[in-house]
Image (cartoon, rainbow, N blue to C red; front, side, top):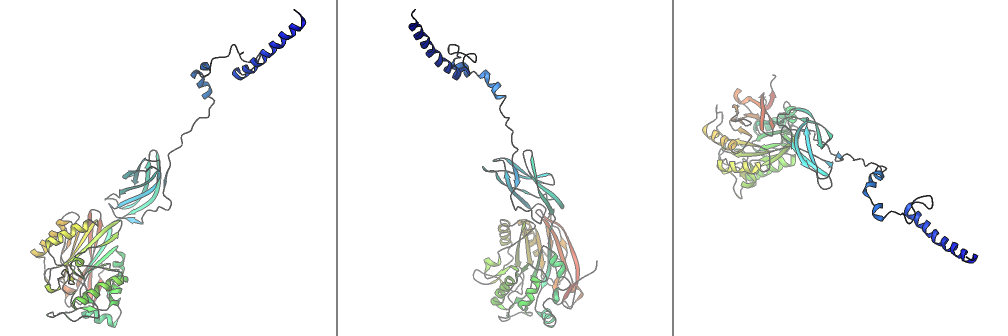
Length: 436
């Protein structure tokens, strides 16, 4: 073969080999001496063989599962204290749509689920038998976060009998001070979570004496301000036979004076609806409703649709009002002005009214008008009836009417869980606690 032809063959072969080498590098990872040639290149199906996956996966970084988040909302604080059985809520963030459990003293108190973004508010109840300080926590899955320590104790309500700023009390205040009647008892009353009393007479400088009455009581607003701000009386019942001693204007002035001092009134108002409306007070996470009714003449003092006065003691209305109050409150306290002066025991009418109240759901029934102390009884578990709390800030002209006391009632969500009467004696229009 001529030399020129040989050269043409060699050049042509070289031109064929170079593309093959390049293609081999791309497909096989090498050229001559390294990887497969173009003829021996594996099919595409073999390159995707799943059997080769474990070897490649062995070199990948392992995925570490992160623990589910659980934390309390910033700024969330437990209340200073709660009454047994009161509701308790805790807010925070957890895994989205996860179950969150509220724990009090290590025991489940409530549960709920977090939202789509993990936010939750879980609500439960403090155990009704718990008294003391307990740890609160929330748990979700294997995570648990402490919320803090919670004190649990009963609500203490203090109740006293007849209070007036007229008659001898007004005379004594004018010669001493508006605080004088409360000096010996104010610390105990202020120490209660809620204090309540029966207010006899008007707090007004207006109006004329109601006709046909022997006694007319009224006093200045300064006396009332001391009762609220110094002695700590929160709720006054006006449902009695002295609220309109100086007419409708005297009654309305009394309501305004109590509110101006920071207190509340029940049992009397600008019309019948107002007189029958409950006042709600909060303590220890519970809502306590107060109502008041009068069952003593003069009946002209009774409120009507457009006439100021007192709420009449009609059993059917009382039951209805208590049921309405229970829609807004956890416990209901009812004041009655009933019976007869200086009576020695309750009568059938008082028993009827007390039963109507407790059957409708009243927790505590407080009585006034007798001006003497009568027994305190427990008609059913969690219920208490004080037939008469006697005089308190009042002129007393006999040993019997001078005997008085402060009724301290302990309350939980289930009702009354304890009570005691702290004895006192009225001297010179001033109640004074007795030792022991």
